[in-house]
Image (cartoon, rainbow, N blue to C red; front, side, top):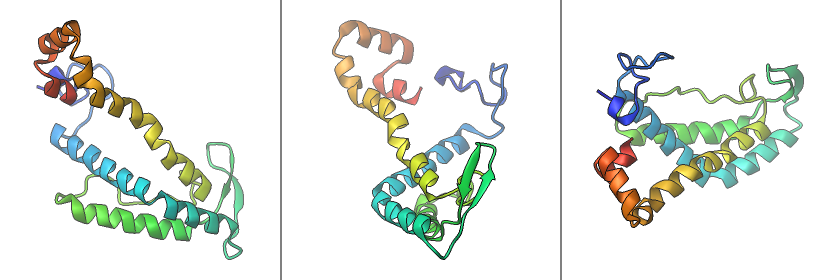
Length: 166
């Protein structure tokens, strides 16, 4: 039923590869909740950056040089960044209005996110990989001023709004 929108990865789709065992609705809420959390992180990046500096330079926490599976990394607790992130996560969960779909664990100072600098690096990449999608969606009305592109979208998807769901 979702193959029309290219969602053949759902169980019962025509995908030969991995499939999702949850519903399209659950996947929608997961993505929506993730984007809301990312939005909060971006709006609070200045606080997170200051906390990251304090965590990295702290004399109260030491670091270990460990092979995390991503090479040797400085693994160090990030209590200040963790406090801000737990607050942002809790606020996002409360505002969601539906049960939280994703994990409620904030990885910091472990194999996944060894230290505060790597945390900052991961979150500052979000705009870079979402920007092309946002630019396309915002530019769609202008693209549709070309009669050939508009005809293709109408024929293939039915409308600009349905293309956005694809």
